[in-house]
Amino acid sequence: MGDHDIHGLGPLDLNLLRTFLAVHRLGSFTAAARQLSLSQSTVTTQIRALENRLGRELFERRAQGVTPLPHADELAGRLSAPLDQLAVITGEEPSSTVAPVHLAGPAEFMSVAGLKVLAPLIAQGVRLRVAIGLTEPLLEELRAGRHDLVVATRRPRGRTLHFELLADEEFVLVAAPAWADRLKGQELLTALESFPLITYAEDLPIARRYWRHVFGRRLHAQAAITVPDLRGVLTAVTAGAGWSVLPSYLCQGELASGALRLLHQPEDPPINTAYLVQRPGSSTNPHVTLVREQLLAAAKIW
Image: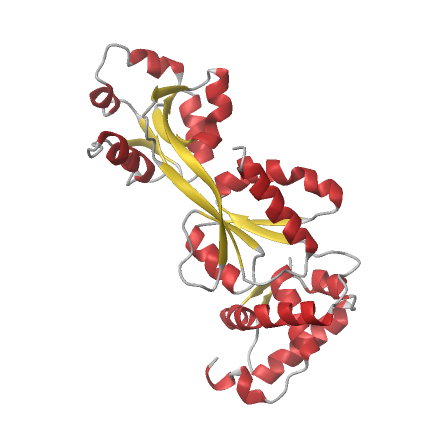
């Protein structure tokens, strides 16, 4: 942290650091005060005192909670593991109101599969705060303490994070029945390259990967529709706009009902592996363990 490095400031009150970490994780002075059984004014005073000691602001105050500034993310990344371990050693009792579990992952997975799987836990008192985004930024935020668990579409690099295999998602080539019927009697690849393609991005990342893995050739096509959310791709394909390649979990209902049809069934379909990632060490929040175990158990039958 440059000239304001925490080691050059002399001893810091652990209570200030605990309060800082709670605010960073919860994104709110009010929520941190509730978790720590403090008044909101005490939390505000402690954060201001820490900012004065460090000589810089740590949070951007907003109408709805606070947003950590870059130095706050850096400080949280250095404090998370030591303070969590200290809480385990000292046997701190959990707050009467268990903190929400901060879970993050891809928008499509969290919206379609993750929340469906985790819904039963709400009756057990679990509270969820779900963030969506791309894997690499989410993993950086996890290292900094912004999340408790991240569903990642890539295996994390390095040893700073603990990961477990969550599931393998299979990609399928699909279209609405009207387009599937038009393919009858035609050479599949030639026909598809002239039919409307609905895809996630202009460079056709999923479809190109399917072509390379299954057919061993490049895909020569332009997108008729691009939408950066696979749920939108699914909606357009089901409505008859064209064809696409989608993860099977996303469209299994449509395939079962006949709203979509498989256009090809390779023996070795391309897959994408999802990982469940958290910081090393035991979380002091028992609900993090409940969420983790529920996701892993559900993944075994996907």
